[in-house]
Image 1 (tube, protein in one colour):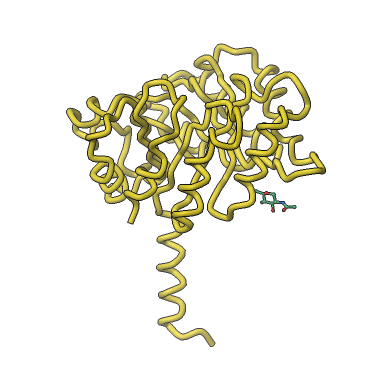
Image 2 (cartoon, rainbow, N blue to C red):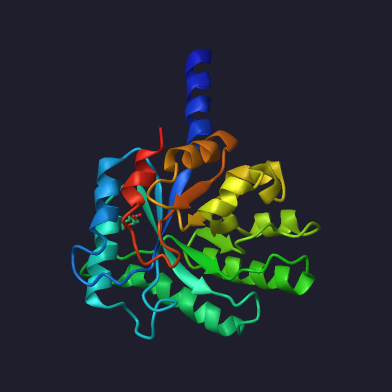
Length: 259
Ligand SMILES: *[C@@H]1O[C@H](CO)[C@@H](O)[C@H](O)[C@H]1NC(C)=O
C-alpha cells in the first residue's frame, strides 16, 4: 500500500510539473550555419530543468516542400535530442480570415515531418499566430477547427497567439481549444508600465497564459519578469532584445532567470 506521504509527494510533483512556467522561444531566424541557433542549444543544455517550447518557422509556415531544408532538418533533430524541448510549428491564421484548407494543409505538412527517416524532425504542436481575440462565434469555431486538426494530427500542443487580452464572453471557449494562449505580446516597456493582472482575461487561466516581450534592452531586469511570470503561475514567458525575433542572443539570459 502506498503511504500517505508517498501519495502526497507524488501529488506535489504532479502539481509542480503541470504548473511550471516554460520558455516559449520564437525561433524564426534561419539557421544559416551551426552558429545561428547555438545560443538556443547552449541554453537548452545549460538549463535541463527548464522546459523549452521552441517555435520553428521555415517560411511563414512549413514551406512548400514535404520536408524542410537540410539546415532546418539538422536544427530540429538537434532540438528533439533534448528531453526538455518541445518543437512547435508556426502557422499564421490572419485573425481567422485565412482559407482554412491552407491551414489544414500546413498542419498536415508539419505532422508528416514525423515520417522523415534519416533524422527525428517530429513536431509536437502548432503555434497559431495572428489568432483572433474577438468574442465572435465564427472565429471561435474557426479556431476550434484548426485546433482539432492539429490534435488529430499528433500535434498535441496547441498555442494561440492573439498577442492581446481575449475579449470577454468567449474566454473559456478559446482556452478550451488551446493549451497555451499568448495574451500579452508587447514591448518590455509596455510590460513595465502596465498592471500585469489586468493584461489577462482571467486569473483562472494563468497556467495556460503566456507573455512574449520584445525590445527588452540589455539593462532590462529579465529576472524580475520571469519571476513575476512564475509567481503568477503563467504557462510560458519569453523576452528578447530586438523587435523582430531575428536574434536569439537573449535565450540564455531568460533561461538563467528561472529558479
Ligand atoms: C522524436 O522526438 C520526439 C520529440 O522530442 C520524441 O517524442 C520521440 O520519441 C522521438 N522519436 C524517436 C524515434 O526518437
